[in-house]
Structures are given as structure tokens and as C-alpha cells.
Amino acid sequence: MKDTVIVFARAPRLGTVKRRLARDIGDRAALRFHMDTLEALLRSLRADRTFRTVLAITPDRAFIKLPWPIERIPQGSGDIGQRMDRACRRFPKGKILIVGCDIPAANASDARTAFKALGGADAVFGPAEDGGYWLVGMGPNRPAHPFANARWSTEHALRDTLANFAGRKAARVRTLRDVDTAADLRSGR
Image 1 (spheres, helix red, strand yellow):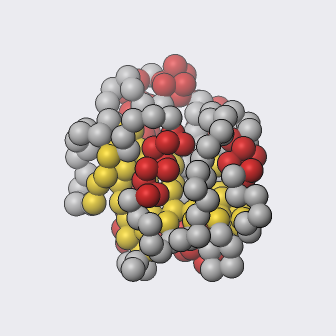
Image 2 (cartoon, rainbow, N blue to C red):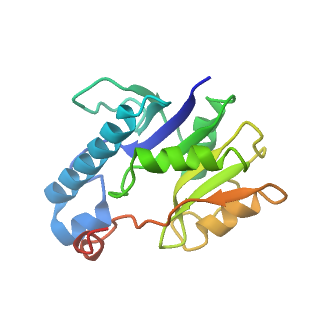
């Protein structure tokens, strides 16, 4: 079975994506950033044929016009942890990665590095500078509830999630910064 990268994304609708960024640069510019970043990530991942790329979208029946076809799955209801857990359970065999779509520097090379790290670890994380993470990956030996009790959208998200992997080996790939504000955008990261 081929390894799988699942890209988590919100449907590109004016006023519903990158809301903190939109407060600084406007709804249209935030929507443009969201789509540009999502398309660049998907283009990079799709070009690598060593793994399968899947788009997990919310809301579930939302339409995203992309320049090429891509397998899509619904995220479903619940907090981000419940939605990621549901996505992982769709692919119980093989290695999986979940990647956020608002990390301009993320690309297929990061996915290859993460899959390689899973050769010697049960999990892999791509830490974000804010204490969360932009990538999480697991092999088939997964905890029953890998995302339980995490304080999402806080500086504790990575630490809380790592607690669910106690007794298992967890690797890390490079730390990146997501773009939440105009200052993040100007920093070029």
C-alpha cells in the first residue's frame, strides 16, 4: 500500500478562511493567500509519485475548483483532533501524514523526510513556531486516541498530542511557521 499524505483545508469561501489574517489584509487578500498556498502545496505533493495525496475538506460537501483532479474526503464534524483522528482511521494500513495547508514553506520534500523518519519511529511531528504543529504522521502502530485532550490553537497543542504517544518513539522534522497575521506574511515564512 502506498503511503498517504492528507492535506487538511477549509473550503475557500470569502470571509471564512484565514480570519485573523483577513483582519489585517482584508477578506479577498486572505482568500487569495489561502488558495495560492493550498494550490502550491497540492501541486508539490501531487508531483511526487512515491505517495498518494488526498485533500480533506471542510465543510464536507464544499466544492474547491482546482486545476487538476485530486482524491477528496470529508473532514466531518468535531474539533480538529476528532477530524484528524477520523481521517487517520480511513487509512488504517501503511504510513500517513496530515499536513496543514497554511504553511507556505511546506512541500513534498518535507513529506519524504517525514515518511523516512517513520521508518524508525511510530510518529513524526512538524513543529510550528507557535507551539502547535503543521504536520503529524504515523505508521500502522498508532495509539487508540492520538489527538485526545489536546488544547488546540494554543502553545500546548504539540506537547498535549505528544503525551498521547507516551512509550512510543516520536521523531520531528523541521520547525515552520504558519501564517496567521500580516506580520507572519511579511516575515516571508
